[in-house]
Length: 192
Length: 75
Image 1 (cartoon, rainbow over the protein chains, first blue to last red):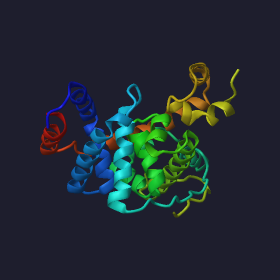
Image 2 (cartoon, chains in turn orange, red):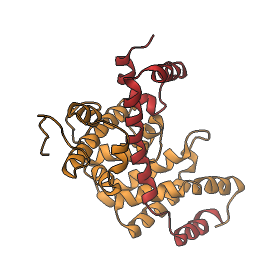
Image 3 (cartoon, chains in turn yellow, green):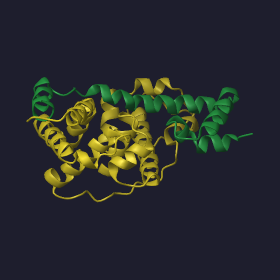
Image 4 (cartoon, chains in turn orange, blue):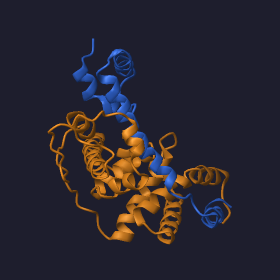
């Protein structure tokens, strides 16, 4: 299709975010073919609604929001209900390692298998998982994540904090089970 | 002078770079001198790093998709 220079420039800029979009699509669909379809459809929709993009705002967040909405509408048919997570303490991994008498040094984290880190993220409820993926994995600011998800910044922060607590809890359990961390003294090691 | 409790309460927001510049500086100055807070800061920094590495585990978009999108939306 013949395009105006402005439209071409918009499309070129949009394509600079393809890596992030594709990774996001893979995580949403868990299927490379569906991820490609989702990304392609998101780009076509973005071009169609180009007028609603405000220059100077974050295009990556805008594109991601389009893709996420498409995913829930087209691929899932409905939005996921939120699931609340228990408050297990803001820095539960650090605190537990210290309380167990283990030295909570950063190299404990280096010993955790990458697969376990991925598994811990996968175990999160969907709405918490996507905040972690946007902020902790893709490096979105709270503001951009809020724009992408269509929620207030306070909601991003509370989901992120609870999700990180849960991730720390999962990694602590794994560290104990796999022997990376050994409890000392008479401390009780939780079994799960 | 900012207290240890205040630093720990705002540690995630500090690590995410989401505080006002003056607050970021206050916490950085506290961490540079506090033997109690600094190890926890290092630990939580490494925790977040472990998830940032998650990004590198996924493949980039296939070349066929890149070319198809170029045809569809740029040319």
